Image (cartoon, rainbow, N blue to C red):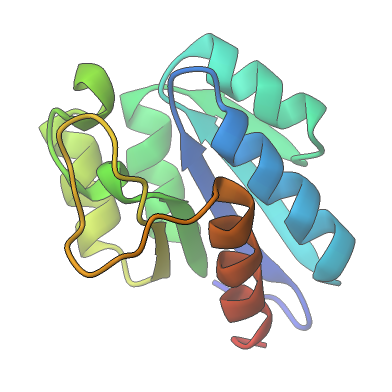
Length: 140
């Protein structure tokens, strides 16, 4: 659903929303024409991402489902495509919506909450965010 020159980016995060906050700040600093929607799995995550500079925000399962249909790019921790991950905050419906979206998915390989990605070296979250934003900028 890309409008001329505008990339519709959906950032999904849960728990405290800190990964989402860092992503949104980095995207706003480096990507011109980004229309960022933040969807948190809980109100704290959504509030944190809105403070970080998302243009729109919502909380919960249905906003993930609806926003996933409209996004050009979905970005967040790898758990957003795994049912019951992130301490149970990702419902099966959320994971299915993200996984079946036509959007490009940029997944941050956070090795937490019983999800370990083999072959991914232990690097800092800031390095992972930098790589994710670099890949996002390559999509334009």
